[in-house]
Length: 314
Image (cartoon, rainbow, N blue to C red; front, side, top):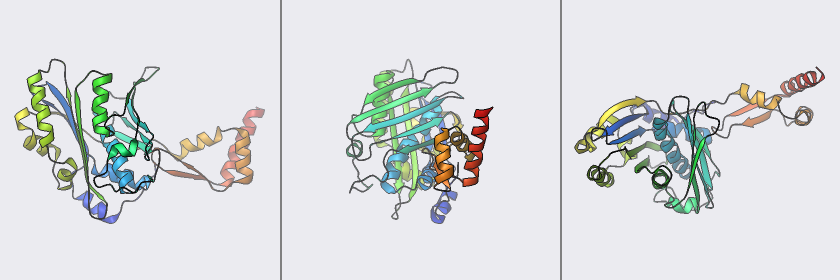
């Protein structure tokens, strides 16, 4: 992946904040599990690579934050993908998280053609009618597990909660927040989820649900330099939080120039002949998931073509 440079002002701001990451915890002695994610740097890195405006950053940023949260729920070597397909102006997105906390993905339409601003935007109007799909790729299994639900709230946090209740019969709640400054830069980004574990009693689950509306905005809290441990200690003491793990979360993609060279060299010989003869040079290939651009000169294409012809003759 080729990382785009960040704006100097936001780089200084990020360097003053605690690092990104996810804190995994339980509540009530193991009756509920959860994760709290701080992802301000991740969202800004994603924005820079994809060259997004504030509105697009809000939409894709929330998807990245939720995917980063859910990376805490999968085993080493596994992956999880979130996808919304809608008939609204945003059309949807596809994001993927690995168990190591790496997150990548894209919007289906950017820029989003709407006169609305990020402030106070109704997400339901952006996505319209459609579906949310969660796909789990388990290492060693030939087929992924795929679950799909209809969009109801139009908010990724609410629709993810509906997905877990309908598809996995698990009560789950999500909160996602981004804080923008006056120049439209993301200065705070965070997400939180709670999930009932088998045997959790209704009285305690009710207390967790009652606590959700009173929690402070995660984007604002993290923009002010708050830490994840401090948030749990200050906001959830009556629910007896116990930290059980920490993990890194970051915008990261496994693409490389070598991989794209391999894709090009294995293309049809007719395509290689056309590119080598007619260009345009350099030929530019772009990774959808991180917007990294890899360029190949005429001489490289001619060498790929020569190797293909040699292989076919051999």
